[in-house]
Length: 202
Length: 202
DNA sequence: CGGAGCCTTGAGAGCTGTCAATCCGGGTGG
DNA sequence: CCACCCGGATTGACAGCTCTCAAGGCTCCG
Image (cartoon, rainbow over all chains, first blue to last red; front, side, top):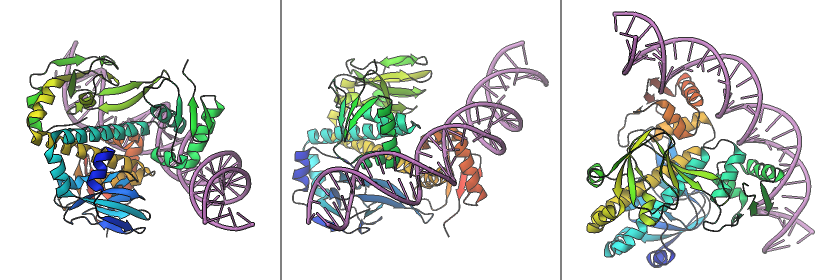
């Protein structure tokens, strides 16, 4: 879930063992010794907790480019099962290697903390977005949050299918398209493919 | 948003300036020099981002016991406005004091990273919960996640109003009560006040 | 040319939000 | 000591919104 700066990430995972998984194939199991953390190269993986009650709860869904199962850094065994939602490829980084690397330099550790804090911030912003019940308003606020910070123009361009954006927002893609269409109809936005221009609020 | 171990927290905030806020009163403004982070003693505070478009988006809502505005650690100025949602009291910790404290000991820094990673984990689990559309299933999965880990019995006891639990789950309290009632009707749970016993799955 | 994703729109049903009313327990002030 | 009030808990009725299912068009690529 953490995402290091690119150079650090490369260094840590460059020599790592690569593993290819079929749909539904497990990467590790709850209770296995926590020996490594992973970088997702392709596909999506799920962390699934098996409970005393006998059933399971999905804890997280990891995407390409993200670090995965970094909770293992702070535990001797994996706390969840990890399985591939779709055909996937991951690169492993042994835990001891990573701990040694960050143990060397407090600066690296601080950078890691910063990035984690930022991810936490993002996750919480996402939760706050989901408190908006109306699809149209939620979509609009998300667009506003997606504005490149610092820039004064009001243009958002998504670099992945709107399908996925909808999923992030907790909406079906149909509801998302309809919401965008409604916003465009009211003149609040102008859309061309994945590029959206917001109308300033007076 | 971070939450340090209690002793550390006490030490850091013990001498901190205390500030009392009325409903709607601002704690700081976007663009102010980031001089301190806060511990929420009472009430709830919101981080609100003012956008180039002219309107605002809520980024986070902080609760009593939580650290607040710790993003300020990594920025020279506050990125958001902070206002009290209700009458509130906070304790400040100057940023330089905090940085000095964690600069002294890498172990403290690592502990802080661990806690942040855990909060990130929790936030993402919450997001995953919200992907469950059905109120009844969402409530049930939340109960399962709320089981004290390690214990083999299936009892959850909430230490705050169910009203707030509902809010966390993104449901109205009415929908939450109805969901609980339905689960009890089907025999999936047994409830007495804020204590709930889950039925094992077969 | 054909297929696979992605995008788009329609119609209908079900679920949740909203509004409203009631009950209960605890705390407060007269 | 009692009356009152307030916040939490609970349930009913209804409207509205989103999900689901379905169908069709688009673009890119083999």
